[in-house]
Amino acid sequence: MNEREREQVALFRYGLIAPLLNDQVDTKEYLKEVEGKFHSIPYYGERKIAAKTVQEWLLHYRRHGFEALMPKKRADRGNSRRLSPDDQDHILEIRKKSPHMPVSVFYEQLTGNREITKNEISYSTINRLLKKHNLTGKNPAAMPERKRFAHDKVNVLWQADLSHGPHVGSEGKRKKTFLIAYIDDCSRLVPYAQFFTSEKFDGLRIVTKEALIRRGKPTIIYCDNGSVYNARQFKVICARMGTKLIHAKPYSPESKGKIEKFFQFVDSSFTGEANLLINQGKLTTL
Image (tube, rainbow, N blue to C red):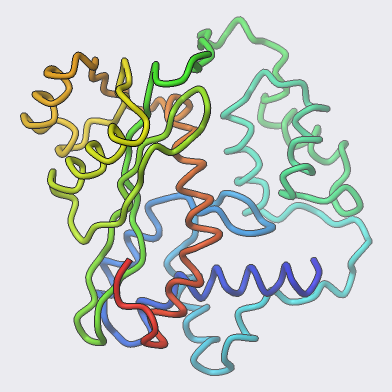
């Protein structure tokens, strides 16, 4: 990991601890929120983060400043090493999302996504781990078939979702923000997205209106079962314009992967810097 990558990781970590620095959020509630979702971490990839880890980062920052958030340089860089229990759990979670992918391809995917590096973790190490947990993909008949979730024309299907954003406002009066967005399933283009300080229907109404003005009408809108997407007003809007509203089945993350990737991009490329500016008093709204 070079200095720029270490700095990117530190900036991400700062983005997570920023709301806690001045006691502007409820610590217990915030840490529970952080623990409950996956985070797209520069260099390390998509992982969950324990509340204890966030508290350690906060302590390091308060004692030693921004530099303390940077990953430590490895003294044994270039040498092979064993997978830690946390690394093993993380790799197994990734594997469960694509259990029938050839192990050789899966290994290349791990290195390509920088989950591991070839000079530290060998193919045989990954193969042994998957074999130990019966995840080498030798028995595809045991798993139900899933059809590829994609459309080959624009405006056939838009995925809709919301994600938690930075806490904004003047010092002592911070509010949560929520990024509401649509993404076209074919082109991956985002018709419209905007931050709001509420999860209520009015935000979805605004985003829907602006998306329609910019990109026209979709045939289908695909969303989760959140209350805002079950609002009577939203169903009426879809019915009036002849758009079919479909709600995702529980535990089907692959069907919303495209918009999740968009939120991960926003989180990794924007949220950390936004939190830095917010805590410097240079940014009070989004």
